[in-house]
Image (cartoon, rainbow, N blue to C red; front, side):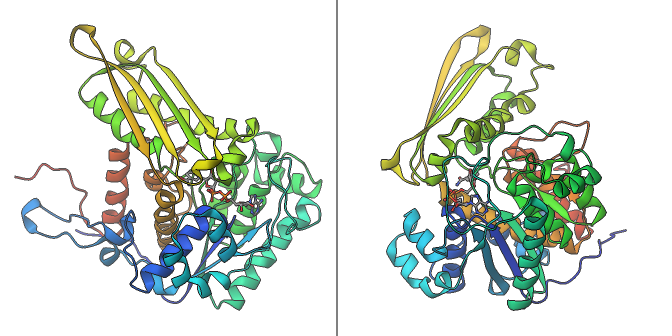
Length: 432
Ligand SMILES: NC(=O)c1ccc[n+]([C@@H]2O[C@H](COP(=O)([O-])OP(=O)(O)OC[C@H]3O[C@@H](n4cnc5c(N)ncnc54)[C@H](O)[C@@H]3O)[C@@H](O)[C@H]2O)c1
């Protein structure tokens, strides 16, 4: 018998709130506006372009995902956000130099409308940036001010539902500490203005308190702290994160499962990048880079299972670096040298040279995650959403199990979750 999960309707306006109105956020907003006007196609968005097979192979049922599950329509999205700079979405989009003037001019009024709310910011967490559009107060006061911002935006824009997607800069590295251990400890830490609470945690806290799903596009600890996971479960709010899986790491999680599937060995993986946008400038600081490095390095181990295959993957040299190189702007270039081992231990090499566009790869992820986290909220799914691992370099995961990094297992989990929501059988590929 098919049992469909009860999912509330996607009626009315969905507000998408983004802390950080920089290159990624404005490329996502401008893109949605261009698609709404029929000027471009949402290439890279799985929710908009992918189909999902249902039933047996020969049944011929493969609707578009957006026709299969009730997602908000692009026409119903309303954007807003916070930034430490006052310029707004139009200025940030022009400054980021991601989209051509023809694309930007066509959506200029929509971008000009989006003015940043004053940010909760502390330069100790993002050392390379400082800006004027910043709230003053203790951490408790900042958190309450963000809750107010969310309420005001919801009322002013007549939103029926909201989601929050962190598109802010990468904060400096932090391990979970006592202030992040439980919700009670976190609340007390807010009251005593504890400096181990990062600004991004204030946004996550305000979102959860407002019952708004929270998605983390950067590698910061943020809502991955036990206190905020506990809070999300208590307030019945979905969490997703962290760190959008876009350029080099996307390629790594495509290639590594293939090598392992064929039992080809690996001796080393050397990855380097040049990047010239503001994100690259922020990542030039060792504290922010450490946060990114941990996220980028984590993927190979769980894909290759060195403890199960020590002969093939037990001794790998894995290096990652990012160099800030202004002439390239958002058009990142990544090089990978992969030293692999074949039959009888003979060495071979793979070279990957990916000339990508960082924000062009990240923008469709913002859209998909806004729509799918809103779906999760309407389906009353609470806490970390592992089925959204597909989109992240450091996926949130249940205690006591390893995160899943293999892109193809992640895709199966995503699609099977959607099938499960609608009472369809998972696809096993066993039918004749
Ligand atoms: N583009 C990609 O492929 C990709 C992939 C994975 C992760 N990311 C992450 O996404 C984030 C955004 O990237 P981007 O290229 O848009 O960077 P960006 O520098 O263009 O934009 C980030 C914006 O966040 C703002 N900001 C920083 N701290 C803030 C705070 N506390 N409150 C409000 N605003 C704040 C900055 O002023 C800036 O305008 C970065 O953390 C980046 O590492 C990007």
